[in-house]
Image (cartoon, rainbow, N blue to C red):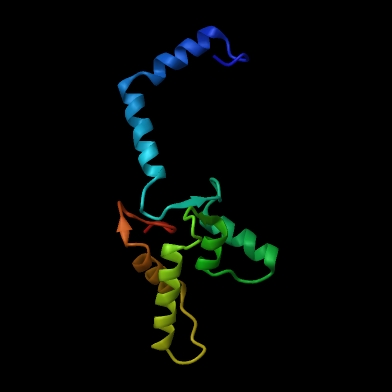
Length: 133
């Protein structure tokens, strides 16, 4: 028991942690953390993606693309430094640009579509890195 915690509170915590429903939630949370559906650490907190984008644009004095904001607010867990979805996304953007006239930039809809493809599509109404779709 931690020194700073009263004994009665500690006993209540132990009782809660030993309930089957609590144990199931804990196991599900562990599984979610080790999921292969992206394996990144979100560093943006509870602030919306749009709010991060606006903040970064203000800080840098320039428009920020979806992929730049995403890269800024996510850090991959892979030990070798690879970024599975990120690298696939950039390959897809490169292929897309080869089919377009020179100096054509993808629209937000184009980048969202390319990202959705690179991140394994929609899962439970959400796209990894984009949220609700």
